[in-house]
Structure formats: C-alpha cells, structure tokens
Image 1 (cartoon, rainbow, N blue to C red):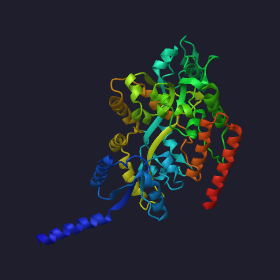
Image 2: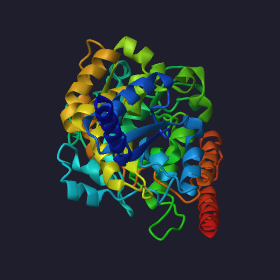
Image 3: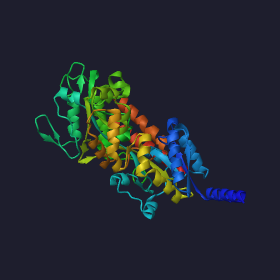
Image 4: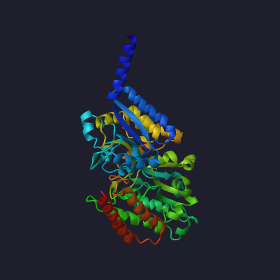
Length: 453
C-alpha cells in the first residue's frame, strides 16, 4: 500500500511537470553572457520556478559573439525562444518584425506602468506596438571638468534642465548649442596657452579641447541637434536637415575652430588614446551613465568633475539614451506564460537585483535613489555628484533612437561608419558631395534588402 501511494505521488509530480508550460529565456544580445553572472541568473530562474507550478522558465545563455547568428537561426527554423534580453536598442533593431506587441498583455493583466517615466514607456512604442518594457537605462548628460572651467574663469554649465547658463558676471544666457560652442572655444587651448578665440591660436598644436562625444557613432553624435535617422517614413534613405547642419558643425569644430577632437587628435595620448574625458584634457563631454561606471579612473581620482544638463538646439533638448529591455518574440507559442515570467523578471524585487547584476540604472523610479547611492559609494565614495540631472535626462530621450533599425542594418552601418571615418580624418572632406553619395548608397542598400525580403 505504501509503495502504491508513493507511486501515485510520483505520477502526480510527473503529471504536474508535463502540464507545465515551458518558457525559454534567451540571454546573449546584451549583458549576462559572462560566466561569473551565470549562477546568479540561474538562481533567479530557480526562484521563479519555485514560486508557482504552471510555468517553467528555462535559461539559455549564448556567447555574445555568436548570439545574433544563433538567434537568427532559431527564428528561421521555427524554434524561436519566448523571451529575449537584456538587449539594447541595437540588438532589438537587428531583428525587425520579430517582437510581440505587449500592449494587449499589459491591458489584460492590468500590468502597472506607473513606476516608469512615461517617456521611457513611449520609447518602446514602434510601428509594431509596445515591443518592450523599461528595464535598465543609461541616460546621457554633460560631464564637465571643473578644474578647466576654474582655470579659464568660466562659470559651470547649468545643473538642471530648464535653467539658463549664468556667466561669471551673473548674466543669464539660453543654454543651447551656440552657448556651449562659445564656452568650448574659450576652453580650447594650444601649446602656447592661446585659446581658440584668439587670433594666434594654433589649431595644429592643440593640447586641451572644449567639447567632445566619445564612443558614439555618427547617429548618436548628430542627435545633439535632434533625433533622426537615415530613413524616412516612406522607407527611403535621407539626411534630415538638422543633421546636415550638425555635420557642418562637426566639420567646422574639428578642422576650422579646433574645439572638437578630430581623428588624429582623438586617438592620441593627449586624449587618453581615445578616452578623452578621463585624460583631463577635455572640458566637456556628452557621456552615457555606463561611462561613469567603467572609465573615469583618472578624473575621478582628482575629484575635478561633475554633471550638468545637455544644451538645447532650436529650443529642443535631446539627451541620447542607451536602454536595455526584455522582449517576447511574436513566434512564442505561449505569450501569456512568457509575459508572466517577464513580469517576474521586471518586478521591483527582481529587477533591482538584475540591474545590479548587469550594471544598469533601474528604469523603475522607485529603485533609482538607492541605485545612485550605491553607485556613488562604489565608484566615487565621499562625493556629492549631481545625479538628479543624470536621471532627468530620461525625460528628453532621442526618438527615434540613435540605434534604431535600418534595412540591412549591418551593411548600412558599415557604410555610414566609413563616411564618419573620412569626416573625422580628412580636413578637405567634401561634405556636401559625400552626404549626397551616402544617401544614394544607403538607398541602394535599402532597396536590395527589400528585394531579398
């Protein structure tokens, strides 16, 4: 009798296991692929599986170098995972049309979006619907070197959005790209001590620069002048007018006025072999939050920096955002079960742990104060940095995002990166001609991509 009871109990357990809905979680397009993170991610999966008996979450971790190809193969073979993430905008854009519109599931489950900045929820709305929910965000802001401002006798940039620039004489000015350019010129210095506003300034002997944007492709750099993309609403290649203005500004800044590092200067030891702001020779830099956690060792040691608001252009502020999310594939056989697992991963309790694991700022407003306290203590102990302006940048995201999708994404990216390489390294680059050539060649790439599909 006891053996029969045990057998029945075992059969019940087996029956329960077979009745469970399996949800596959694919990790590989972003953070989470480093081996030290495996145990913590598996522990979260085990915690979810132990919390209920209806859904079984299965973790699949694929090396980032192979993840794009592996996921593409799975999708093509009709074997797509249910949940993919964390992944950035670029990762999601590499798979257009793959992601499920989450709006019906948000509505049917009553999922609470009130803990997110509304702008960040809108950030994930595309022509395909709401394809992700806010998870980890990396806002951008202006990092500035206080020592260089003090040496030049200049007042610091505004500490909050909506505030004017108040100069050393107490006069208020609109904080826009023009005013930032004026400061950048005064903060750019040659080897003889002349700044870029002086007639004897030597652009071929610069030792200190006024402004720069590191480690950002040209779409990200041009977003200083407003969001945009190389494709219009009709699917044709384009160069938005405000980006044409921006390209002229960058060319002039690098090769005529000298306050923005060109290619040769940017890769030199004077500018930290590419880590410009940390070299101590760049007065202002637009940086993303991930930069503060990885790459400010020298400047941090001197305690001569803080954070400020990005300037406006024609009355509009655009602060580029890097963001990671989790999405559900349209091919998921069990979208409701996948959304239940996704809701667990994005819950305040678990999302905070995943944010700490992956290193991103929580998109949940309720988690941000604790995050910044821990971030400052870990990276800049004893400082009182302006984290408020960092978080405030989320209210000015670039939509469309500078990593938004393009037809034949990688081929298009290679083409505009080649354009940027020449802009940054050729003082006689014929900008007008090369813009037209870029647009024409992108059109050929887009047309070929459509023909293949």
